[in-house]
Image 1 (cartoon, rainbow, N blue to C red):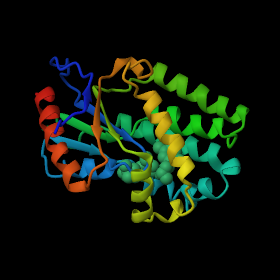
Image 2: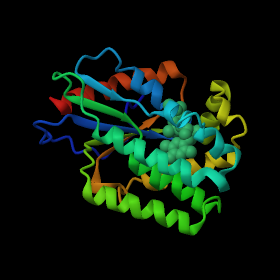
Image 3: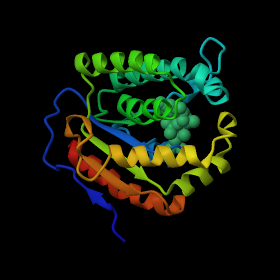
Length: 234
Ligand code: TTP
Ligand code: MG
């Protein structure tokens, strides 16, 4: 079986000197991003910047993830503002130890904007004036703050598989997530990380991983990816 179904990665040695080789893990809700990151938990040279879902569940006692799912028209703007800010925090986070020359992030400010904000707006769940406020912030941030990035790993799943994993995982806030919602997010991921690489900022190389199989098989593919990351970072 092919380890990497498609790669547009420019495998040349990167120019990193003082900053870590930085990887974003992208893919639908339930595609296995957190599981992917956990494969690196014991690597001393890898700094993991996990997505702060728990922060969104408790902003001074308010569960914004829950509010967004309960009443997206009312809360999605506030929620996506928080997401955008916490993503920026992750982009700026620096390795904890000097030996960590690789940084792996769950998602990025790019997918928050290009997938979720876009979807909410398209589905009429976010009003145009709210969308334009978020977009103005987004454009300013990516134009004025260095978003360090070397590689995107796209865990591509059939939306049915992602949906099933969400049901199995049973995250409380996601109990009423519809299959259509997951399908829409899937289409937006595919459009964003398309084979022609036209929408990816700064032409960051994208590796597409078939993340449909059982977690054991996907884990085996992760080994191949891990070698690739390690090779590129050194
Ligand atoms: P994901 O970022 O997809 O993370 P996950 O843990 O569900 O994915 P995986 O199983 O692959 O580890 O989404 C987390 C939750 O936050 C999910 O319910 C979708 C929601 N979300 C938004 O609504 N807007 C956003 O901008 C982001 C980043 C997430
Ligand atoms: Mg996760």
